[in-house]
Length: 287
Image 1 (spheres, rainbow, N blue to C red):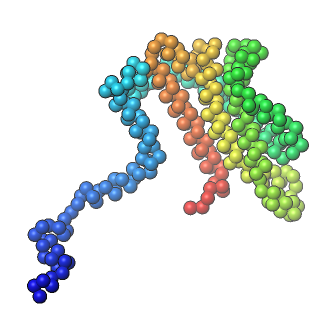
Image 2 (cartoon, rainbow, N blue to C red):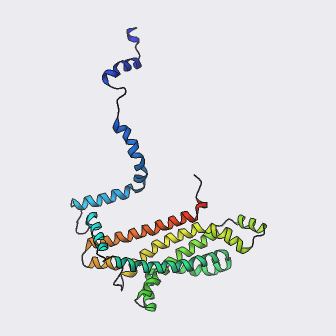
Image 3 (cartoon, rainbow, N blue to C red):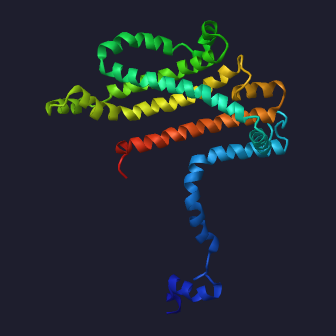
């Protein structure tokens, strides 16, 4: 009888003395509430935050040369100083004007042409080899040609950006039209729908997601080509500020201009994603 005491009984007997039962564990109970909201953020941006933290610490502690890689707080301070003083405001406006004109022109030409080529197979087959040839030719390689033809002014800068941004929009639009379910088109024809109705109610809505993919690629390409265009023969613009700061060894200002370009790219992509979500609600999977 003495030895028949079970483990549970012994534990219940000793627990009040050892304070094992009913002990509050604030840290353990607090962890899920804190880690829950942070888990999605860390899973998505953890590497980016770790990289920025490593940059800041390594530059402050002298692990890397701070003259070449200044701390992030110094870069942010240089960016704020340039914007507050107005030195970067004019450059931002001129750069957005150049890339904006080129991007809008590429959309105005690329989307209608892609919709037309995607529906008319004979035109697509005739123009596709030419498009593929020019698409594989780097816009930067053609930039000297554009300068010879259009001069060193604004026209050549805008045109080289337009040239690079046109093809992602055009090819994505063509691909979106060709991916439309032909069963839907045949069903619409069975119910007496005409070509305009089929295009307006089936082809165009089904092509919108692919068109937005091309728009996002083109927006990124526009900013990349903007830098190269403003590094040659320009005296204003964010790309010019990057090169000018590098020549004058103003490294914080150089990184500030690069950071500004990255932020503009993120803002453009976020705007297009938001617009796509508003226009393509029907394409989102049900949750």
